[in-house]
Each structure stands twice: as structure tokens, then as C-alpha cells.
Image 1 (cartoon, one colour):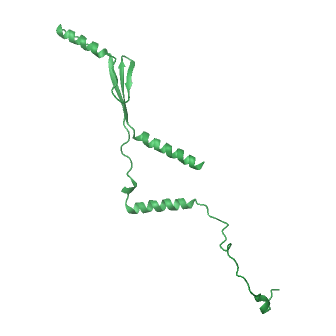
Image 2: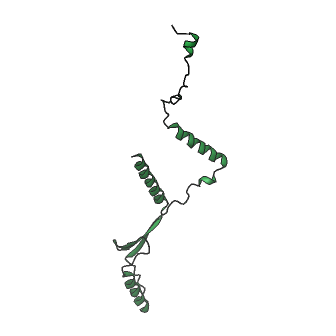
Image 3: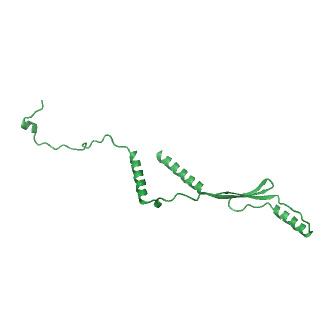
Length: 143
């Protein structure tokens, strides 16, 4: 259970770092108020109305009359810029800072370790084999 939770959290953190550093651009082509095409990778395709307005403008140039023909099409671009200033690596710290961080992490981890409370140091001790009974020899008995 605990290992699965750590895997989920680490996957979430990796996706979060990837999402915060990702940048992309969306190109959209509108004809009037209607979205004709959009693209994430390359420029969006046009609907062909620009060619019609260009030919009308060329015909009016021949007649020497000035008619401003505006295109009903428009291109919009939506850009999301990712984060570029990530934190420096662990090697950029001074040696004193590295020692402090390492000792802090080590002591913090040791803080939550379980200690054995039923530790008996002489549990495996075997008493020596007695060849003679010393109390009986000296005639000293507990009353």
C-alpha cells in the first residue's frame, strides 16, 4: 500500500514538472466568426477566401479604381510559454550546505524508525557449567 502510494505521488510529481516546463502554440484560422482550422504543430490551413479577395484587388488595379477589399478571414495565434528557470542541481551547493542537508535528512529519517523496546542483552548468555556447588562447600546458605 505504502509503495503504491509512493509510486502514484512520484508519477504525479513527474507530470507536474513536465506540464510546468511545456510550451506550445495553437494556430487558428477564422473565416468570419467561424473556426475553420486549428493546428498545434504547424500553421493552420486557410479556407481559400484570401485568393478571391486578391483577384478582386488585382482587377480593380487594372481599372485604376481604388476599392479596398478586406478579407473576412483572420488568423489568431495562442501561445503558452513554459517555465525555463528551473532550480539548480544539488552539485551547485557548497560543501557546507551539502553536509548540512545530508545530516538533516539522515537525522530526520532516523527520527521515525521503530526501536526495539524488548531488547534483553543477556538473553543469549549461557551460564557456565558448575563442577561443584560452592555454597555447599563453604556452608553459606540464605535464610
